[in-house]
Every structure is written in structure tokens, then in C-alpha cells.
Length: 103
Image (cartoon, rainbow, N blue to C red):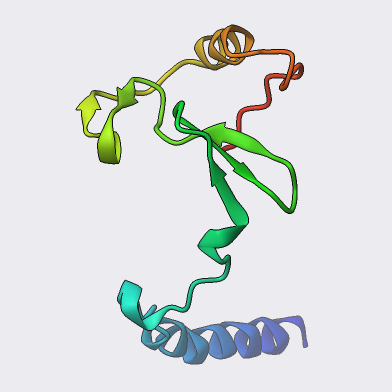
């Protein structure tokens, strides 16, 4: 009886495997995906930071190591966990005392 149940399970898996392989992800172009957050909701402070006026969250416009228009100046690279913690500590200010770094 146990062997029949295992055989049935193997058969079900074997039949389902091609179905899973057929379920391919379809990527859509940016123009096909509607914006979910209106740009008017953000305040650009002109100092490299942006604030979401609904949530009050503020973040840097560019990744660490990048700056300038379109974040085209500099280079960004990976960081260790400790390096990320050090960066968060370095960017703390009276407005952002916790130094939260979004991921």
C-alpha cells in the first residue's frame, strides 16, 4: 500500500513538473507598468536628499559613492555589514537620528 502511495506521489510530481517549467515569467517594459506613486508626493531638497511627504521618510537620491545629476558621478560598490552600519552612523543628523538606511 505504501509503495502505491509513493508511486502516485512520484507520478503526480512528474506530471506537474512540465507545467511548472511552462509557467515562465513575463517581463514588461517600463511603459507598460503604471506608476504606483505620484512624483508630486516627493520633495527634492536640492541637497541630494528626497522626502516622501506622505510617510515623512527621507533618503539619499543616489547610492553611496554616487552623486551628481542622474547619480552619474563616482562609483558604487558592495559593502560589508559593518561598512553599512558605519555609513548609517555617518549620515545621522538631527532630522534623522536613527540613521535608517532603506534596503
